[in-house]
Picture (cartoon, rainbow, N blue to C red):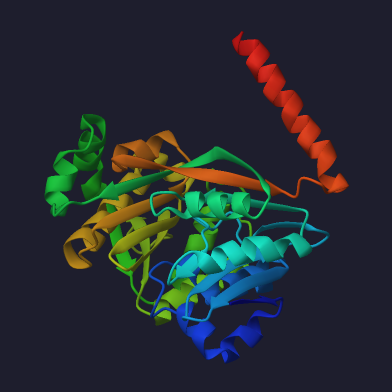
Length: 339
């Protein structure tokens, strides 16, 4: 017997001992799988949460953090989320039950940036197909990573492309770097100033990011780094990056530099300094550069992983028919183009 519950108020989840523990820092080794992350998305990013929870008699648990209303549910995630996946403890049976019961809550469910190196995309696809949903699975993004495989930072840097190694050799002496492991209000203000002057698009939710950085600093996981021009080390910082470290992995969340400082390559120098910190001191085994296949990431990362979008439709819901027709027509057009 599997019991299914839904929670739109995430604060009430904290009073549920089993569920709160399963979604706590003690059980989740990445920020995107924790209750605190979803609460931040709800509080600062305007997402309406619907936490779908299925529990089996044997203690097995499946949690699917969803968002949205009006019958079309999506992943409880946004641009800050590297990857989205269900939380499964003790087998897939609760997920199967969840997929069946969600038919009474939604006519369509869209989940993006789902990994499959851990079997998440396949588990979701199988469960929803078994429950009678039409499932469309497609590649939606790339995740660049660096497995260290026991290397020191010097060994890792020696294997970087020649152009990057030359840049680091020429510019490192011209840039001073510092890594903060606790939240520092002045350092954060400098990060925000740098980001505002950078080539980056407008920050999606500064309040969310600040709250996340503060919490990660309190937990000892924050690595907030600033770079200064060595000719003016007391002047304004010229580059900033925000990383976090946990579970043997370093996550690169944000990076930016002032456009006027581009000739000093402060971003590259700062990335190298943070690599040295997380590899030689924090002893991580993996560095995760998030989503997006920007060319500069290829200089630092050595492998890539696929991220999938899963679109699930209740086949007999009239609200899905226009979308399904469009998908069918696009498929026909693509086949015709291929001949």
